[in-house]
Amino acid sequence: MNEERARFENAREEFVSQWGIMGAQWGINRTMAQIHALLMTASNVMSTDEVMAALEISRGNAHTNLKDLVGWGLIRIVTKKGERKEFFEAEKEVWEIFRRVARERKRREIDPALETLRNCKAATENMESTEGKAFHDQMGQLEDFVSFASKMGDRVASMQHGKAIKLAMKIFG
Amino acid sequence: MNEERARFENAREEFVSQWGIMGAQWGINRTMAQIHALLMTASNVMSTDEVMAALEISRGNAHTNLKDLVGWGLIRIVTKKGERKEFFEAEKEVWEIFRRVARERKRREIDPALETLRNCKAATENMESTEGKAFHDQMGQLEDFVSFASKMGDRVASMQHGKAIKLAMKIFG
DNA sequence: ATGAACTTTCAGTAACTTCTGAAAGAAGAT
DNA sequence: ATCTTCTTTCAGAAGTTACTGAAAGTTCAT
Image (cartoon, rainbow over all chains, first blue to last red; front, side):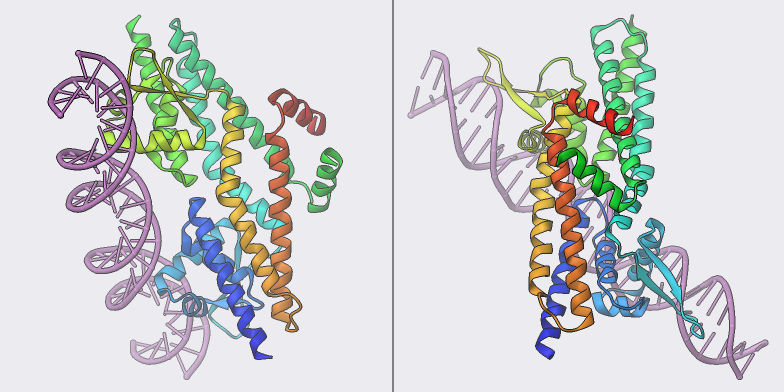
């Protein structure tokens, strides 16, 4: 049935496009998110040229973003024996995707932020002025919150999918 | 002590700058995040002109971003009697900030994403091909995960700070 | 009505990010 | 050593987002 094929391709394109928009809103390069969506919904590994063709983008663009995705641990390089070319394959398990994104964002964004908060707190230790005290206090509260949330995130991300769901069920009924 | 004042201003500037960088990484306009940081660490309400001066930005820029922050519910307009001018004041409670950001992001980003996932899933209902089936399945898994996570977020965000902490303690000891 | 004090909008500009295409680099095949 | 196939890099172009400054709009007082 070829009408089915068309419907499938349509849905897939909508997904790729929307995933790209979402990515952009979250501070991820649009093309990178689109390639990710493309590979997540691919039934076979894809080469750089196939990605280029599917999204109508240049080699440089495809290359850079494929490599960035590998850096995020969201896709991996696959080689076929007898072929020199590299192929790419996406992690498809949702829970695993979540874990990797969580880990990377923590490393890239949360940890540096905590660093700053700690600096700012330390730099205003034992101040006399009301302003200084309030600032110091505010930094402390932010630090506590961020580090607490970050720890919770770690805990959840280090659980197995099934266990996390069960735990959530237990808590929230 | 004026050396203390300088140390305080320094720390505050570091915080404002870093909060801006963080915001940008999370898909929030840098200036908006900086104004937020500035107001969070202000001991008094500030006028548009004061914000302009503190960050050395234009009136248009200050105005737009102040109003956007009001839209996010992160700052509020305060009027002083006898004064026509508007002043701004930030929510300072970390937990409350978290709740508001969570609510807005859900509304602006999560809900539309869920919409797309549901569409894509529905559009590939009952497909025969392996590819179609796999796609449909993948959309289902993504939808389940996102909607589950979103519900959990809601639950947590609707708790009082103290209760949330206690709960977390109980779970993760 | 006019003016003063303030807020809002917006066209044009500046800054930044992403993308292209071509050239250079690597590595195996002959 | 040279060719072929593929990967990587990068300068400049295109596209996007954010910012400025000035003009228009609003509101209140006189």
